[in-house]
Length: 110
Length: 190
Image (cartoon, rainbow over all chains, first blue to last red; front, side, top):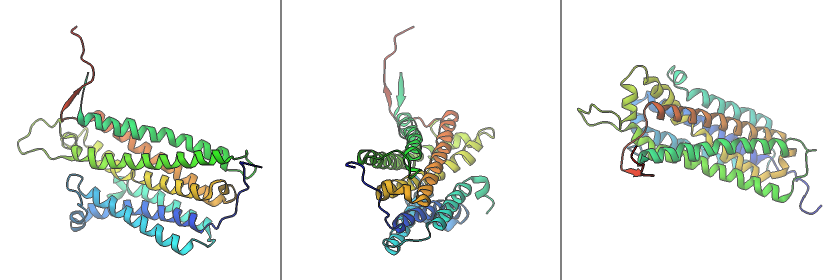
């Protein structure tokens, strides 16, 4: 039918790469935030833009890590089918962990 | 009726970009569930796919603008340190909140969570837009990828809700104000 082509079964690798990279990037936000809060040297290192303070380095670092992870996974999985169910579970766990670890009373346990 | 430049930017960031994202997120979830969750669902036209692709991409742009204006325009005003000897902390919201035990947790929990959790939103929705743009209707036959997209969009809604809630409460307890004043309407004398 015109205007409604059938769905094609593309390899799931590129989608899985984007999903896992997003989980990694999300967790990186929380991990970098905890490190910048607990380690004085990292706090100074993360101060990319003084008016914003360490938040600038925490988020820029996490974004760079996310994009690098995405590029590497995309390169590795671009034409492959991977176990996307496992990838999805891991990515959602990473995202959920990030939600928890950014919550200050939990972050302060470290 | 007046507003300060800092107040205007805070309003644009929260009520403009942030609130618009929250509303758009609900729409995206409805559309994704309605059209893409079942292989036997309603027919998807090319125009529907194009609309959804543009919609999710616009949401990603909106999420990035929201966090960038928050972190690089408003947050510096929020965390600015007052000069020594300052007694009126009205233009230094973080210090104003921390100066009183009944409001300090709005900073130590509210702002500390908001400033980090908000960044999960653009990362999540950018991924959702990218995966949707690549797979479109094929998401119907990739249930795990579809679950990932939906899961990340749900959590982006939750994270944006946290950021929005604390943003509103912080601004209620210690408004980001100051800078030049803009007169919107000149009121008459009572």
